[in-house]
Length: 138
Image (cartoon, rainbow, N blue to C red):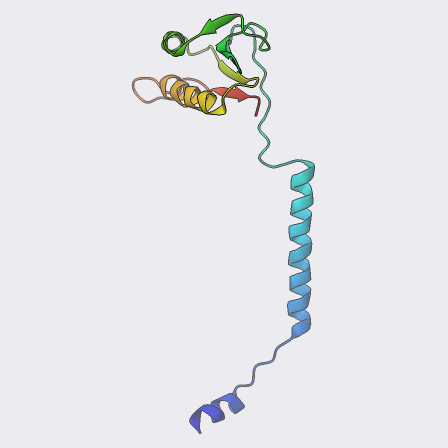
């Protein structure tokens, strides 16, 4: 009988209207966030177009290479020539690197971006020396 006496002594008031109101408010908040994200996604990357003097690599379905205008490949590269270009950029911390995907393999672009970022983002002492590698065409 001890359990039944406790239940009788401590009745809880349950206000359904407050819970319903809070549920509706949470639903409206979630709906508002969803609408705002569709209109202007929070995760949208800022577009930073290549400036004069930047190293621009364009990836197409036929391969990848250096570009002057960021549209067409002007000088074809292979893996080793790209690595030599990246090694040359280590001494030029003011030069930006842009990787533009125009139909090439995403895996190749991401692999090259990871390699470039590891080589170019920090100096020998671990200090940040340049902004991150810019990737376009996603």
